[in-house]
Image 1 (cartoon, rainbow, N blue to C red):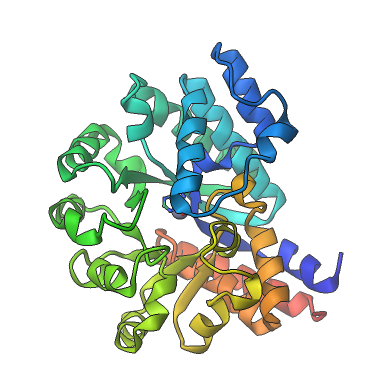
Image 2 (image 1 turned 90 degrees about the vertical axis):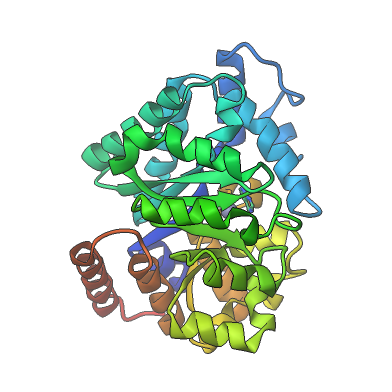
Length: 340
Ligand code: HPA
Ligand code: ZN
């Protein structure tokens, strides 16, 4: 391992943008299917992995939603969450905020209770057994109606105190943030932190809507914002975090090569960027691989990497005392690791 890669792997960090349904490793996907009496289109982990070739977001989402079918019982939700959080412990991810989109499951008869109890059981065990802190983000689907999103919000009311925030994903183009103005207003009224995927495949205007109409706490992705200088200034002045996902952008053809990735420009323009994995097995890497590959491709300096790690905690939906504690761990680490 190079010094740089080692510095990145051992650096304390948070991850703020990943989807639990998108974290199922191929071998686990096959085991879950077997446990639930299903036959997949692939017989081996290698065959499944070779299906991870995408030409755009919709192409990926088709496979991602197909993969959701293997999650049926409470134990399934527990197992995928626990596996991801074990990986966090191994990768020096000290805090993780994880999306799950319950509509994929409840529409097939899975109860919201099975999903929440499974995921939250793993959150509790990971904290106790591995010392990893995590928060759950409930993600609504933008291709469904606003009424569907409201129904989802009502269904999670019993777990209000255990939900770190509410987000939104799914096919972006044609489903702008403005479609969900009332929903996001209600999320805020109920006291939830909010985010929305915007500017991944959609235009800068969608990022602007997310800021001006929805007043979200974070933007997931946000790449397209760079084409609008006054929007860049708005994001910078308001210090709105962007949860950027380099390998996802590469694998969904948002960029043709990581050397073309906008992360360096985001940092140079003073934007509040973080690096994340989105759907790690599908896109070929967890947060460390995202940091390592984007550092190398853009020749980012050590200060940039430290800024990204600090930003990951600053942008987290945690209290100020916890942020300060994590930031001082980074300062300590940087002092003790002069190389790179
Ligand atoms: N975009 C939109 N929806 C998603 C994504 C994404 O990158 N990953 C999982 N669901
Ligand atoms: Zn995402």
